[in-house]
Image (cartoon, rainbow, N blue to C red; front, side, top):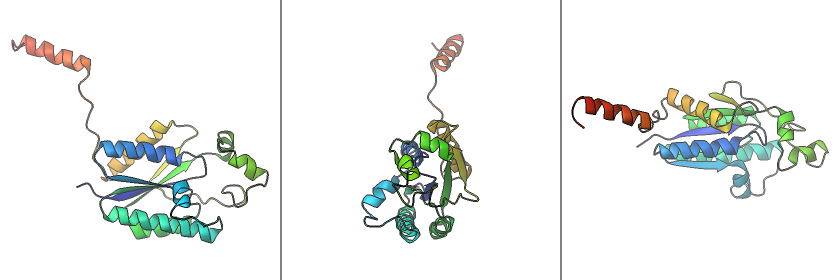
Length: 200
């Protein structure tokens, strides 16, 4: 059975964490891993309902996600967390607890995030309508030594996902993907060779 580990996507709101989590989930399932995605927004609606956005509440939220990731990882599941998780100290705390932990920094400049802001959150935060908004009036502490950094302002989601999968392969957490089936050209070349040998 494949071993469990945690992939922890961190980055500001709108950077692309959930999109990448879903791409990685699909690819790992194709490779026959058991995978669970813990998305920050969904966790806040269920596991962390009632928590606010003070530092203490944010840390509690991240510890809860980390606790679930740890349980999944111990039971041979790949846990994928996609949460802003703005504070370095609590991310490092979760890393220590889980052990088999891959931190992915989903990096994107705030100007680009504000431009692509489909929910209108940055606009409201700049206008002072939302308090404790990460990157505006609350800090975001970049990871100091993440296992992977993807830059979603210059990469497509597929390019970023490919980088992350390559890192997981390099760390021996997943096996390399099997090559694709033969192309039409390969099939034709094989047929020609068999024909030349008198087998066809």
